[in-house]
Image 1 (cartoon, rainbow, N blue to C red):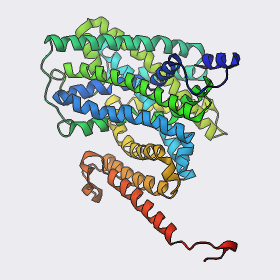
Image 2 (spheres, rainbow, N blue to C red; image 1 turned 120 degrees about the horizontal axis):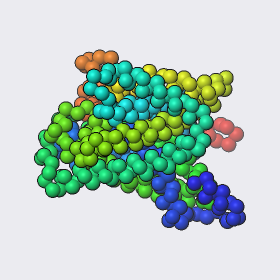
Image 3 (spheres, rainbow, N blue to C red; image 1 turned 180 degrees about the vertical axis):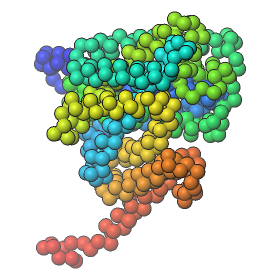
Image 4 (cartoon, rainbow, N blue to C red; image 1 turned 135 degrees about the vertical axis):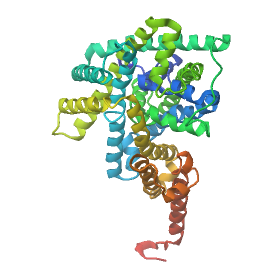
Length: 463
């Protein structure tokens, strides 16, 4: 992408208001590749296994949170300028804290440890039967993060090579596994899909929506919007509306590709919904499918490609988070930040993929609601900017409700709270009504206050 923009400037072309379709497609694929990581592959297969006959409505809910919200996040940040500028409408301190939490969530607290855990889950079936899984996980994580740390210090050509090789290879693997599962379903070679199990045995679309939180793509999109907008400007689009139009087109392309991938992987889980009814993560589902259709070779290929893909994503995330926090903490070097994140992530990864996914549900339950509210308000920023007090009240109420509920879910899951009486609370969406009421009441109070304010006569006297 950088080479294309430099070439455009070198030719002395005048900025335009739109890109040729070839470049628009390139920007869309770039955005897709930024979202696409090994972690995104483990959720749809598990959804297919657990939702069974309710896979379609669950998948539609998953699309809303895992595809729709990230695309809107890209647009909202591009409209605002940066994530910091969008969040600063609430309060400057909130902006600093929220942006830091977003980086921690997509970095050392969840996403980085998940790369190692996912890679190990793919390698686990190849371990000797008498080996200790815990000892093997520890040894693997130490080697994995040592290599990732070294590569993060000087990513250079190696990580670019890994990205170019593992990306196409991973897509080819997905096509092969999905194609085999689809053929098995259509030919009647697979068992009939099983009935849905928890959490999809009640209101599957909402549960699919909540599962979409765990992709973390909405949080990631809040950091991607500026990058994509800068790429579009670098390709020669200077007009603000033109940039926004191209960002939206890129979002549609990336969203369509993600929906194809997620839908195909859901089919892989659906095929195995009966024999793998007790599965707890999507890594074992993909491994089982590859082994079923391609034998031991399939298992080896899955493990190798996921290892490279996870390593590449891990290096990128360590670099991204290290760069951000070394800028926020001038006295701490990038090398020190990267080392801290690698060591911390190594420790977290040894909790195992199931534990990480369980913990992520609570943390993302606290972060996602205010992120959703910020995105929605960012899309409607003009009327809300005219009533600036709406931002802190609406987002603040959302933060309080979502944080209290998430803290309860982690510390005392059986504890009853008054918030449980809120509409949609039983579905994990108890924050929706308080956020809507806060926005409506604050808008009304501000407008009434303005009407009651005495008119100012010339000279500063009230009339």
